[in-house]
Image 1 (tube, chains in turn blue, purple):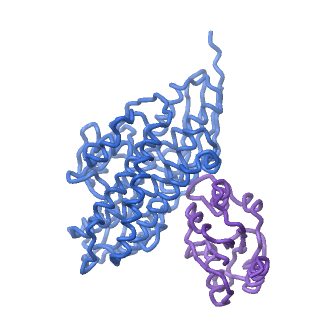
Image 2: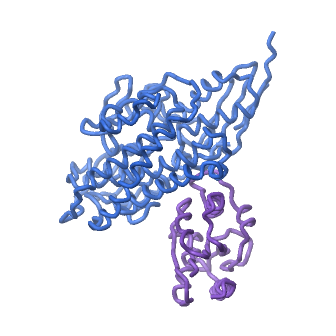
Image 3: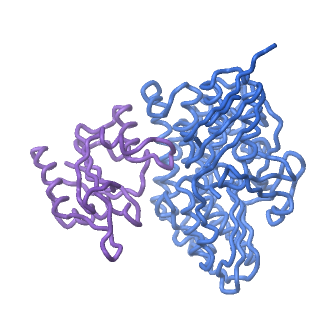
Amino acid sequence: MVEHRDIHINVPVLTRVEGEGALELDIVGGEIERINLRIFEPPRLFEKFVEGYERNQVIDMVARICGICPVAYQMSAVQAFERLSGFTPDPWVKAMRRVMYCGEWIQSHALHVHLLAAPDFLGFESAIAMAADYPDAVRRGLQLQTLGNDLIALFGGRSVHPVGVRVGGFYRAPDRSAVEAMLKRLEAALPEAEALIGWTAGLSFPDDDQSFISVALSDPDQYAIGQGRLISGQGLDIDICYFDSHFQEIQAPHSTALHSELDGRPYLTGPLARLNLNFSQLPLKVRGLMEGCGINFPSHNMFHSIVARALELYFAIAEAIRLLEHYEVPSQSYEEVEPVEGNAFGCTEAPRGILWHRYDVDQAGIVRYARIVPPTSQNQGRIEEDIALSLQKLGLDQDDDTLRLRAEQVIRNYDPCISCATHFLKLKVNRR
Amino acid sequence: MIRIIGVGSPFGGDQAGWLAIDHLQSCQFAGCELIKLDRPGSGLLSYLQDVDQVVVIDALISSGQAGGVKRLEREELAQCQELTSSHGFGVADALALADQLGELPPRISLLGIHTGEDQNGVPVLDKVSLERQIQTLLEDTGD
């Protein structure tokens, strides 16, 4: 008879994730009894803060939910208000918002690939420790992150909590010389981003294919970033206003973030889900970069997320170049958009996945009610499911440190943004 | 030349580094480049290059006299923070990373301002203490 240890693993503070969370794992009689991804960062109550404020004030307020993905919050909000008013931004505004969003993908993906995820694959405690052996890789990450931040600042005045987006367009358009200088930097970074794809694809990945539902936005005209219909690999195809009819938010006792399910099941949102559903919409040149890498999309190995981020980072740089190549300063950077009373819905692809907003707006354009569903809370259920499957495959007889490291790596594959999700990591494994 | 960098953000006690730069702009210290940075995270590294000496000024949560300016040793800074999140990638982490990459300037100094507010909720700064600390750093370089 095989003797099973009862195991209790507790990671009191998860590192290399955005924000504060913990993991608690109980293994009893060789079976996982409980996995709790605990988000303990206190609720931040943003949905209440914004009540009583006018649309453009809300766009600046929601940017403060996150220092890493403020653009996503602004873009989901502005989309909601403009949709409600039946307003379609002009082609210049649409293109420049996509460029600004590319800036956020570049900086967030560069940060996660180099400073948060890569140390796991290369066996380092932190990016600072990794920098001793991989200085050039860390430098590349920092340079790409700075590039993304500066691209955000080009339109938003600053990269942390930018202030450039408003209903109807942008407060101001960047001048041509600033755009030309940025274009040169983007073009210079493209070979670095291409090298990054090969570098990530060359890492060692556990063989860990799992069955899961991918959810992303789909835009018939392009690889979806700032707009689209909600689709899944299982046939979901809905307008974003029907989110509530299919997605349920559930309170979990161990977490200050709401869990989210699609028709009763956990699902994945984020770079891997996007590539699983929309890879064919990437430009031919970008798709071609995956040839010979040994990794194909769609992929159901969550460890391939680091490659997905690298590929999206390259795409974001190439897309920004494409959209800025023939930049002209417009005669006006925004149009006045009259408020309309009603329920406003917005949904965009934050670096970590779909970010859904609902605002109830009155006749004067004042927000009376808000609901914000960030990607990390949506991924929570999938993360817990993934940890269980990954640890079972690894073998629950492994020592605590091995189990803890694998569990942490699984969590980091999702690049969880706990600060955004609080309404999260320290591992606590209990073996009995 | 000395590059003096105030790290902070627009609100609350975190303004301290920026308030220090605002004050130093009126002092006209020769040979100083004054820069305000908004929560630069790892972006701080790019401001440590092409200069002999950098002074970083940041808000300090401590039991010290509100507004007071304290010169910190790198080791003290490491005790203040722990890299747990890129949201929390602070000055100590950026300097540790720069050190690991061999990208620290020849001289790096850190000034912490004990955060605190006056009766009207306005952050306070001991301007005399700040000027004295900067003067000492300038004299140390022989400038």
